[in-house]
Image (cartoon, rainbow, N blue to C red; front, side, top):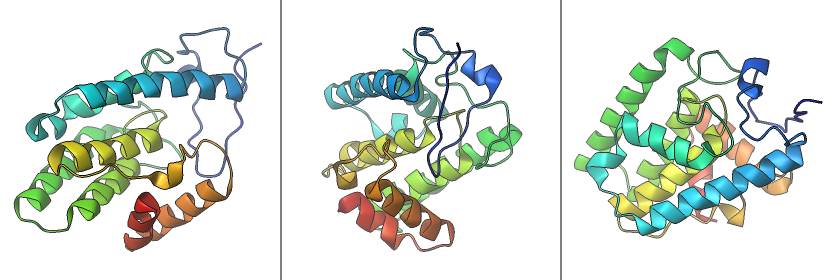
Length: 198
């Protein structure tokens, strides 16, 4: 029996080829997968806490990939590798490198020129990197950790609360988060900032 996945609203399905790259073959349910991924993510968060991350290192393709690999590398062989197929969200997979470079350049410009307050820069980055959708999966959690890293390591501020949720469960908090993302897609970033700080 293979891995059976049940997708919640706003989640990106992974294809059969990507499923084959599961490292722990004993995982067969969504619950088990969520548990193993969460343990891996906690190790990555621990690493960010104990590592002095320099802004010039954070805004690089290498760091973006390395962070994703730290978050998912115990579970997936494709961790840290850009996706090679199109999804229900995201730019065409062949444009990922280009889209990410633009985002990194824009973010450095925003910081250099105080274009937006720190919270807004971090959330704009988080929102844009999800729209690019670099990886086969885990983009939402990766983008939230990136926003936290930007707050802490670039601006020396508290990380976001994200409503004390990892947004894995299909509950009211996740629905509120998805609504805020949709508003950000339409150009209104404020609900997403409010969600992150709430």
